[in-house]
Amino acid sequence: MNPTLVQRAQQVLCANDRGGYTIPTAGLYPFQWNWDASVCALGWMQFDEPRAWLEIQTLFSGLWTERDYGGGSAGLLAHITFHQPADSYFPGPDEWGTQALALRTSSISQPPLHATMVRWMLERAQDRAAAESAVRGLLPGLLAHHRWWYRTRDPEGSGLVRILHPWETGMDNSPAWDAPLARVPATTRAYRRRDLDHVDASMRPPQSFYDRVVYLMDANREAGFDPQHMLEAGRFQVNDIGIVCILQRASRDLAVLAARFGDEAAAAEMQGQVQRTQRAVAALWSDRWQQPVSRDALTGELLDQPTSAGLLSAYAGFGFDIAPAVRAGLDETAYGVASTRRSAPTYDAPRYWRGPVWQHINLLISQGLAEQGQAVLAERIRENSRRLFERSGFHEYYHPETGSGLGGRDFSWTAATYLHWLAGQAI
Image (cartoon, rainbow, N blue to C red; front, side, top):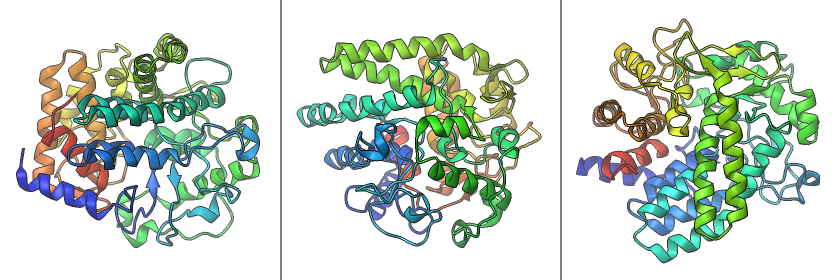
């Protein structure tokens, strides 16, 4: 543990605190993001437990209910919650068409890390009574959100949920989305990106990507946010291995939490969903890359790209032996698991999810490997991350070959990952 880095990481979270929620970084991301919030809560847990629970509670205050848009989207936890106005980010609240909500949000979700993070927080809590009270209060929302995923994104019960927008994956411009996104029309309406006001264009998705994700955003609004209509009309539908893995792990943890707090029926429900996914996931295995990958849900074709998303399968508990793929990736770069393998033709070292190292993903991969008995490999990832933190501080993401910091500075979930994983003890 580096005391100076611990202090600096705490300062990052405190500077980005907006009174109950943590923005990722000033300017570039001025609102509360869904999966960021869960990671941030792990960081707060290291030095301010009440504030950690408040982070998750504030996020779930934006959960869509039966009153919202006819109830079809009840349980949606949006990828952005607009607690306060800001004009430094596109698309802001007026772009999503969610003006009818009491608390404005976007209309898509993000990887559901929450139940796993809540379980980890509970297991680390010093104030047990307060933690148990917080978890009891969060359980109905957690269950509602998982049910939303299974009900609206896997209505046929295949075991593999699908996503309808690249932003929903959290791995926005992953090369895995290139083929299905190519079928999406480019929007013809005017808009102004704000991300390039803060970050060099070489580190961000290109304009052609934005033209298509804006089209998809507008299409959801035109469908009235009705899940059935969105599936029927959706031009982009993908079984994202990242979300499949994260939801699988979270449902396992949610089953444990539900049973612990007396809801055996909910625990059995989540266990049933976990078993269904366990049976289905073998269809996503890539022989070429020796790891699971995503699949185009409209064509059935594998999106055969070696991204870090598939390496979350150990964290999910799927049982695939992904250790050879992890070792191969680590041998190609100097600073941890890259978001896209360097040996892939689509690798682009500084560009967002097409190459850079993201520390929270390295944490989850390392955790999964440790749970599979791959302690040496898990520690190799951890040590690479330690070197990155000490070399470059708390950036949004990092160049996998040079270790230089990329994207936003003083980034909340990066600081939180350090506090939980390096300064604290792994679960």
